[in-house]
View 1: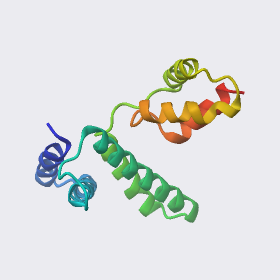
View 2: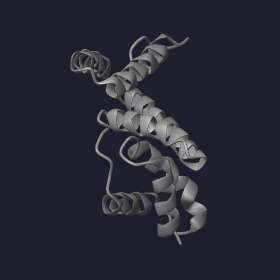
View 3: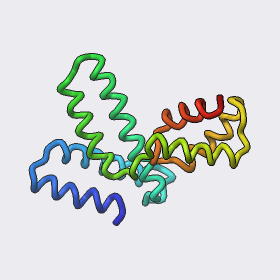
View 4: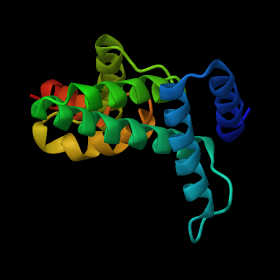
Length: 149
């Protein structure tokens, strides 16, 4: 089932169960999908990799907002953002653990022949494509820096 149809079905379930937080997050996702499908130059339908990018971007935006709310002491708004993050993450592939990420990056480093910190660009180019949706960019970057020291 495509992401859009899955979200539509989940919106109906959330409405029946009167889950306001979940419903708000799902409606926001549906809005993002519709905007992406109808933007100029779009094909009208999202590919699975585009769906993952969209979901990852939505989670990142909410995490950034949550951090701002945390520093400002706005616990009410922080709770809303965290609830939405939890709902959106259900649609993303399972994130790699630190050990799994390290193993995958070591394999990528070996394939591209990287050996020094100056090779980070080569590694990151391959890593961001291969690990899209399953690892956060900051975590990938930090691990690559650590491995190339």
